[in-house]
Amino acid sequence: MALDDRLDELDKRWAKPQPLTAQLEPEAYPVEALPVGVLAAVQEVADFVKAPFPLVAGAALGALSLAIQAHGDMARAALLSGPSSLFLLTIADSGERKTTCDGFFTKAIRDYEAEQAELAQPLLKTYEAERSAWQAEREGILSAIKEAGKKGKDSRDLRDDLMALEHDQPEPPRIPRLMLGDETPENLAYTLAKRWPSAGVVSSEAGVVFGAHGMGKDSVMRNMALLNVLWDGGELSIGRKTSESFTVRGARLTVALQVQEATLRAFFEKSGGLARGTGFLARFLVAWPASTQGYRPFSEPPETWPKLAAFNRRIADILNTDAPLGEQGGLQPLLLTFTPAAKAAWVDFYNAVERQLRAGGELYDVRDVASKTADNAARLAALFHVFTHEIGGAVDVDCFAGASQIAAWHLSEARRFFGELALPVELAHAGKLDAWLIAAAQRNHSPLIARREVQRCGPVRDNEALTKALQELAELDRVRLKCEDRRKDVLINPALLAGGAV
Image (tube, rainbow, N blue to C red; front, side, top):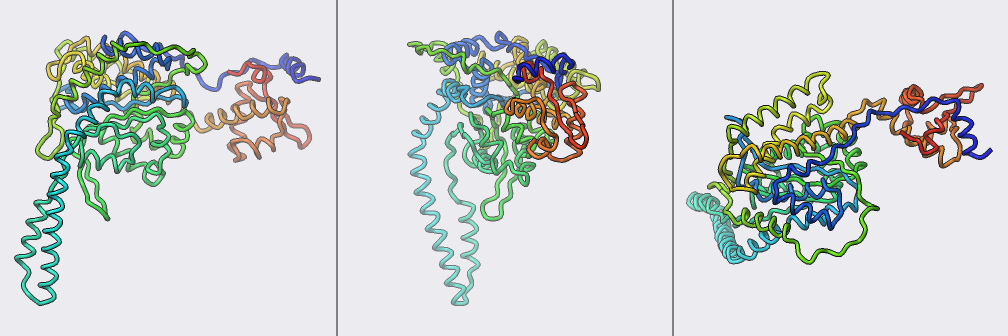
């Protein structure tokens, strides 16, 4: 009997399979919540690139954050203030054109970097000359100290000269380098402390970040703590045995990553729950858009990009405003505040989210993410204000209204994705086993698979864990367990093999 005929026969005796988890439907991106100038540029790029709209919007928000973070912090209330920087995470397959989108929205940033590097050439030459002279003088003093030691002479004056010289060591000029790409956390911290205190990690291959040596089990806690501190705008001292120790102070960091779902899941497993336990991923504005691949017919690029050009001109204007650096080289951003109406709207938003964090509330299972949402809404409002109005002044209620809608949308995306990642281990095992059983049955052209084969070849090898996973699937009418004599088999619900998987 053919497989389709056998499935039709078996199908008469089965109940409809129940879904493994409750599915949350994605909400539409709040397009009109973006500031007019940002929306116009995003729409212009999206119409041509045909990438998922949230991915294009995320590229624009990353550029806003990177350009503005040095100039303005956001005060939500007295003694409650912090950076305007964003951490953005888009979960999408390779080929969704994030690199292309980033390139459109970071053009002004890259042009600014190149211009600053050119202007710094004379300063670098002066620094190299001063450092060479300093090194020669230091080597001379050290040589004199050694010679005095050999001859038994007093070298106290020479040692005093050496100590004074160490305090006069030339410092390299601080040259803005904002786009860092995939950096190790320690290199990132050093760059912010010693080279320029405002930067962004922008990557369309975040597997390099989430799968890197720096995110291995031994160092993952330390490195996530570092990134958490940078998101908070805090201070962190880095001690090193073989080279100079340093302190990150007055630094601002933007992170805008795209990561494949499988890579992120593997990172969760590898980190042993630390990614959520430390609040690391709770700081991110998450997007998990549907792919547009297969629905992107070719179109010629437009002859002009007026909306994108206007966006980049505004970014350039902000970048060309002198960064507020303190005497030690750290940033001292202007502190932005809310208008009274915007502050009242922020308080209402904060309270509405907070009420849902209690047991039984909609956000209880993602309370780590939700607890950061009001903060992220304030950060977005600050960015919208500076882009639309000025560096300074009070953030109005219109800016916050748009920011709160976008922050709430990202929270709904986090609920969808982290809700699945936070499954109890039994249900997680059941999910992996369910996918493997369906694929194996389709591959073998049979809904019946021996249990010993499932244990030998499937994703759940431990006997007790396998038993629990099979029982979970049986309760959901996705499989049946057959025992005849000493033979044990797993029978898959035909509806799952006939294109009716849920």
